[in-house]
Length: 175
Length: 101
View 1 (spheres, chains in turn yellow, brown):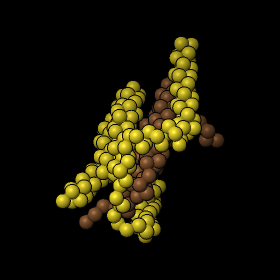
View 2 (cartoon, one colour):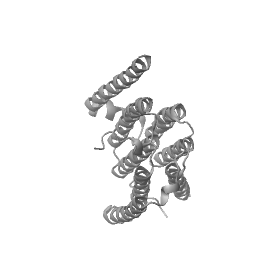
View 3 (cartoon, one colour):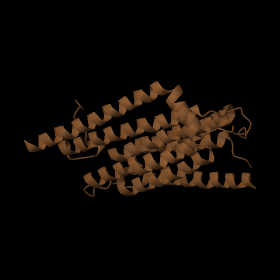
View 4 (cartoon, chains in turn blue, orange):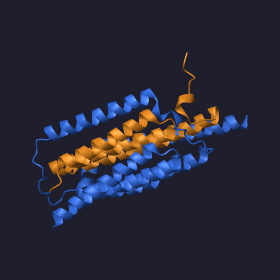
């Protein structure tokens, strides 16, 4: 019975995430696009939970849906002057070619994945400490501490770059 | 019917392809950034599915590092979009033809 429930949860949220991803790509209003992207990220967080990745799911909700997408929404509302993309030229030849190529790529990827995973359908039983905060934390702060420090330097550089870009803008406006 | 690695990988492939289609057919640069985020998320889903398959929590650290890089990319990219909007007055990627000879 728990197996059935977990399959149902996976299928429901997989379908919801794919639908909301398609909406993200196809809706012409960027605000609606961002909101459906947030919904897609929530569904993906629940799919992470079904994989036993609780910490990654929480961080997905907090950082992605909570911080990054709100940043996107702010920038959209700051910039947009109600200029929805016109989809009049949606039936142009390059778009059709790209769609066909994408569908071919998807079928090829799915066939290759289904053929090559080689593992039997079911996941092995999870270890006792799998995905716990303790295991993930010791992995980050012991094994990959240099990666962690390099990423904090990267974030620092990003902050400096964003500050520089905004500062130059305000100078340009003052002139 | 049980859910295995292949189900998660096919879902990740579908999300990646949707993001790729979005990158090719959309013009608004902010929406293009969201498509890139979608593709990064599908990569994260692949990493976490393999973490479950190999029973290894190190993969979770890798997924978190991908999220950090995505956050930095989104912040810098949106700052660039805002700067470009100030100078050019548009967020349409087809109107940015400064380098076209």
